[in-house]
Length: 91
Image (cartoon, rainbow, N blue to C red; front, side):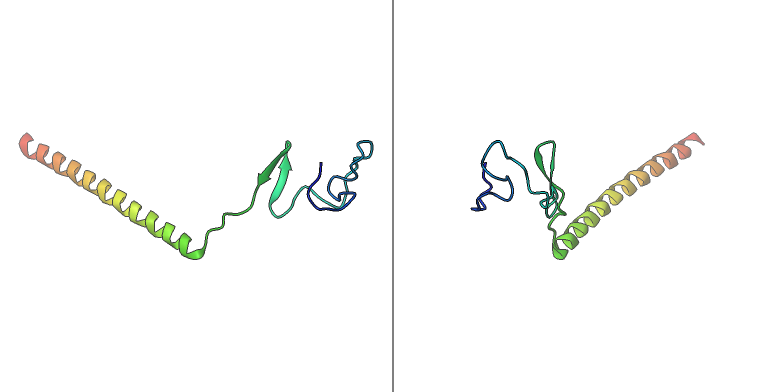
């Protein structure tokens, strides 16, 4: 194995001699949000979203919520009208 550092012995994997595969203890498992879990490289870095992109997402969410509120309000008004019409015919 070789990490591509070009140094002999390699700082990451130690010497290429299979009998001496000791790792350098200075190098940890956590590097800039990347870590190794169960032999797989996991990414825990935050999303790279700019302020303008985030503002655009909030604006889209607000528009969608406004439409949902309008539809819910219309359904509620229709139910109130239906209940009001029933009360007229019951007299």
